[in-house]
Image 1: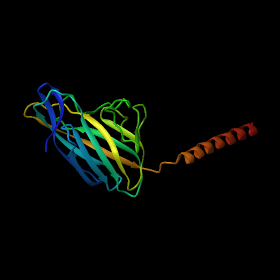
Image 2: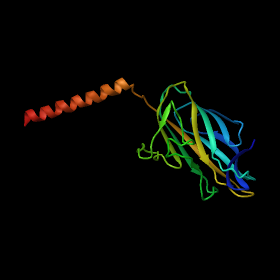
Image 3: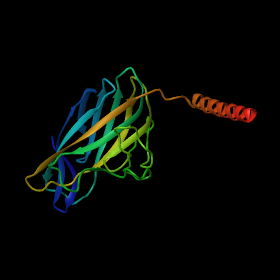
Image 4: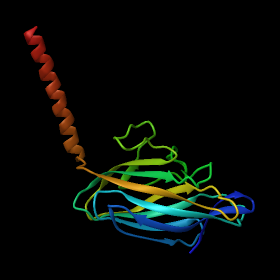
Length: 214
């Protein structure tokens, strides 16, 4: 099955000709078209708290002159015994990819119609937020989300979009998108407030002790 994507010129466009999944976290993966040539519906199941890598193949196709991004809707299921506290997406391009490169659309504008949206499970981190080791800040090829996806639950409304350059007549290229969950316990608001209050009390007692010893 062939899916048409964003047009590079008035008579040419990119088209995704295949998607495969692999990686230590892979439980299952499937995809289908959602009634539009530039909209794909994914279903991704994590069997362990490890990455899943999606490999895309992109080819050239005569276009309609309409320049639109590829819209990806992904039902992400946490089929592990642990809750996910953050979720990370990274684009890795092959040497055959065009110089323009594959990028996430509107990654820096939460109000944009094409902005990534993983609510209510996760909230997109801004580009100013530093990330743990191995992850880059949110940018054209990196999306970082913070929130909670409990064991056994599915993030049904996960959405992001991709700009795919046209490879040119007779050419193809591949790129991969790695999805990495991070497990951890997300504290309830009341618990977090008590934690902060406890830190404040400890700081007060430390300052009081310093004054008494002065």
